Length: 254
View 1 (tube, rainbow, N blue to C red):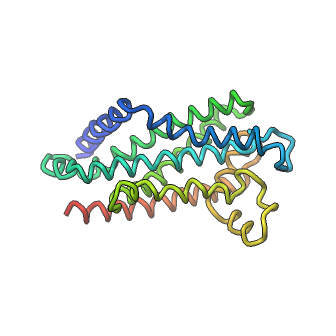
View 2: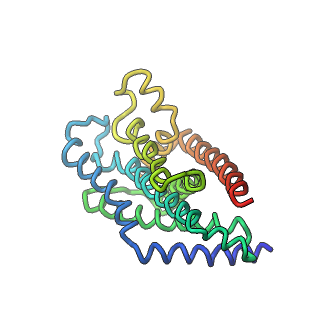
View 3: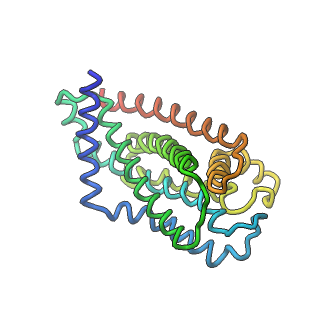
């Protein structure tokens, strides 16, 4: 049974990836907004922002840009899932001996691959713009693991949106608050520069702990408690979103 699930998931994931390969503008579009934000903050606003550190501003703000890249990319997961629901593909799969979880996991794995490609593009542009790090291979693997876990958690949130939306616009519009969440965090400015209530929210929302962890890993500094808070946020969101998505999916196809 497990082998059957894995093989069917692999086949369906290949189907979704082929759709992306036929339309690579999806990945390019996902990377455009983060790259534009990097150009704006580094070359227009960065000189006026005091981060309290001696490093370049691109080093300070890249972790937040990477999270914005993921938040932009998962909107396409909800969009593709909504189109499959409306196009009758799910009903066709139900008439075939395909395990139910394989259909959703195919979209989730496709999201991971597509977002990885976007993250590589954005990081490459950041290197061209002057981003430098002395991070070791282990540090880079830790960064990749946290970003993958964050992508996985948000992708299951996107699955909820794709299954629940009534219109194609509604399927992707849920990502807008997620894209702007890093702006109310430590991603672009230190939180102690914010007014009291805003600073409290910024310090206690998931993006700040994730950004601080990634920034410390890139700078080869101690991550402290931030990494455990970041992992707890990602894992909690992942479990809650997965449970909600699978419950909605069962209800939709029953």
